[in-house]
Image (cartoon, rainbow, N blue to C red):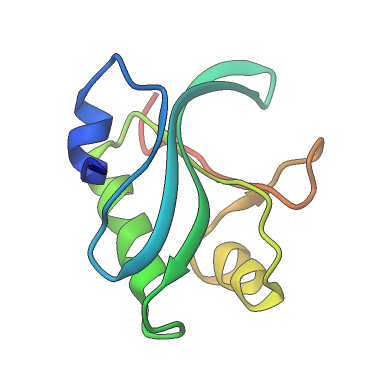
Length: 112
């Protein structure tokens, strides 16, 4: 049985899992640390995100909630293949392109 995203993030034992999240058919998450901007940073990695109804703001709401709920964590969108989502991440949500993996993006933590 898949854990919810919040349950997964609260448990230190799990480093990665397919999770349940309202509005998504599929969502893969990882509790991780990455080197970003020359520093080792705790991240919430999101991948294989498939909304039940694309274009209705599901991903935007998820990112905003995670950013508010986990202000000390960087949100990392891994291997984004949808050009429309790239525009949303960079232009609307404030994500930056990972210079090493240019198909991946990160939203810096609100506080470090």
